[in-house]
Amino acid sequence: MNYLSVENLTKSFGERVLFADLTFGIDQGQKVAIIAKNGSGKTTLLRCLMDFEQYDSGRIVFRNDIRVAFMEQTELMNPDQTILEAVFDHDLPELKLIKEYNIAMDNNDEKALEHLYQEITEMNAWDIEVKVQQILSVLKLQDTSQLVGSLSGGQKKRVALAKVLLSEADFLFLDEPTNHLDLDMIEWLEAYLATSKSTILMVTHDRYFLEVVCDTIFELADQTIYKYKGNFSYYLEKKAEREDQLQSTIEKAKNTFKKELEWIRRQPKARGVKQKARVDAFQDIKKTALQNTDEDELELPVKMERLGSKIVEFHKVGKNFGEKKILEDFTYNVQRLERLGIVGNNGTGKTTFLKMLLGEEPTDKGKIVIGETVVFGYYSQDLIKVPDDFKVIDVVKEVAEYIPLEKGRQLSAAQLLERFLFSRDMHYNFVHKLSGGEKRRLKLLRVLMSNPNFLILDEPTNDLDIFAMSVLEDYLRNFQGCLIVVSHDRYFMDKMVDHLFVFEGEGKIKDIVGNYTDFRKKQIQDKRDEKSNLAQAQIQQEKQVVIEKKVEVEKRKLSYKEKEEFKKIEKELEILETEKATIVEQLSSGKLNNKEVYDLGIKLGKITENIDSITVRWIELAEFDS
Image (cartoon, rainbow, N blue to C red):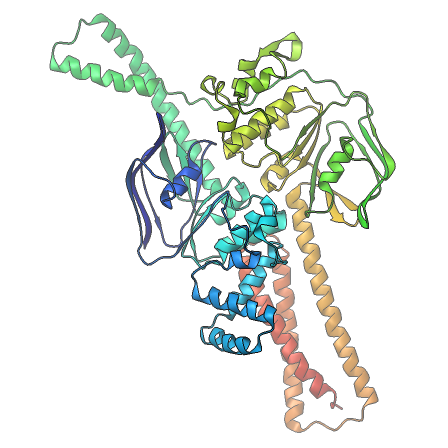
């Protein structure tokens, strides 16, 4: 069933054409991602589809009877609303009832509660209440009385995401849904959307997200859309095939172009129809032959100060903010070519740790010793700040007209920008008119111009497109200094680091050898083992209580029927415990996809409930069993 049909859609800004004659459709249940280079028009396309942005020509048709919800990158919300009011700001009848019920609860209005309880029960809307609490809890928005105007940008983004997820929409439009989410939230959202029945069209740069959630990829390039029916891995494979075929076509066209060019030069002006047709065909061949398929490369062989034997040493460093511990007796020596990732929940001290390393925040006790040869390059999450009249090339020239390279060479400001994927026609653009990703790339360039041998990158992939991230990864793989990365981009972390500092809170930092995926697998396994052990301990404790009661309490004898029931329950419990252990082992294998994990999780929950229910009856009968 077709949910969206787009025909010959064209959008331009002045002389710049973003896309022309786009034609595509999206069917019920599809989960589609749009990927493109920064500035190609991904967000503009979404806004055109939602009729928030005018387009030049074309036709957009939605199925009449579907509900649509859109989460923008910068959501405009009423600052005077509370979080609860914002997420309930829908026309969905069930949500209106739940909103009224929550208000009545706050006001302790028993009469209203009684009336609303009946209405919610009749509408079978209690599952919406559970969903609301689950989503707000996962997104760490428990204090729903906070005003939207008092929230940080990241909190507002999470409120906007909660609002969209609670809309019960048939078709979700999501623009960078994983921005400002921590790793636990991203993985939860990944599983939630992968099993959702909603049709989805999203823009995201999270490559694991694309791999797990999406079944169709639209690449917006060359003012058109290339469609790939598969996930991110399939897209990469087919894109490579398409580019190989294009390169082959261009090579053939070049050979033909040389022959036809000789013929054109030998001929007088075309007079016959056949000659004119051959000249027209020559123009088409020329257009194909002169296509440029060279991939952008981020190559910056800057002259880097060689690191000495002493780099960075932490000696029993401690840091508190009031009663909150950030670090406690932390000791560590950074080694040459160290590639360290930092992960942890918000508020555990990651940013404070970086600031202490850079000397921007004092330690409470202990000391941090920095080697004499260390030159830090720090890339923070803040966008580049320059005067409004600054142009792209001014940002580079402010540092230096020429940048020294290895082996006595140098680069001009213009050449440096080109190496950093800023083409000549962008050099005199105003910085404030650049896209978010272009501004971040420009800021990264400024950081690298200082010739650092110790890079500290705080969320470097935010707002960078997939292609720029791939280029950055290539550069960092060849970087011959030390590297510390704080990032929620799991794909980036897996490629860039070989061990992790896990900030656990209360001043504790755990050093884990391996990449993020290795750490996450172990963390999930530890949690499962802990839950399983707790459950087993609880069952054993309950059984022990029963045994003790059997000794202390004078028991009546069970009837024949009760004895048979008791035997049956014991056998049933044994079977259920075996089945539960099997499922736990399957979940711990790491071989299941998200759908299989979700289904087994539901089954495990039902079995656990069944065990608990039967155990209650077993306890009752065991009390009187002789």
